Image 1 (cartoon, rainbow, N blue to C red):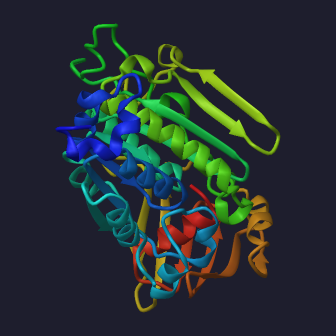
Image 2: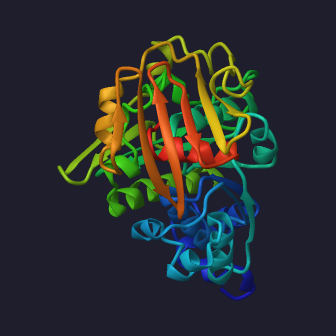
Length: 367
């Protein structure tokens, strides 16, 4: 690699079709925003750093727990003992993996008020999130701003991944004017118009998670990101990847035509209700106590308290009646009392921080 000392470490990657020196320099000039630095996020950050994406911006609100180490590959026992925030710990590890690239760690909750600031300047959005509400917020932002978004999710032994090249208002994104034709894809709300009601979708903390399932989904996401950032649009997958490693199931569902069959409120009608704060949850600090109330807007259905109680019962004793479910939880060294009401409200005792309350809710209830 004479004459290219800065690219020598990427030699094996540059031998691949679609890379070469030009593709590698595109990666080095790119910014990838990793939303969430848990299981999916750490695998994605690790591989994007090794591939030479020039600037990684990593956002996460949480600290590292011992139970994370089973699948969150950038962390170790020392990080747990030192109580390092996930985003900062990832930044430190990546600095030892690839000193050529820049890493920005942001320790914050992602919400409709700050996401525009976080995504400014990003060339691609990588999903490492743990709930559909925030994913719909990211989807809104991706479609409105015209930024590619690689969705991913893993729980139990299953995983999903899908690449979104959003339809823009004027149809002038580089994937919409590509020589091979318009390559814009359906957005996340074309596929899943509404999130499942709270408590009816499993989470890693209620159903467990298989580490290899996470790794497969995240590496698929990274590969899709590398295709987009190097300009290999003809290789971007048009399918929704659906795997179950325990039952040896793998399906690639062709969803390319679904936008024509649904009346998507986001990419068709440009209705960004999550980005504008009209949908999702609202947090209120209750007077006189370390308590946050979370209210879900536009829920429309009563929660299945019996189903929620079944999941939460694995974590401790419950108090259940026709109106509510209540339990005590120990999370990241702190004790919380979580009360869920049939109308969708939740009260989290043990914190004055809305982001902490949302994190507890996401872990143990879901959306």
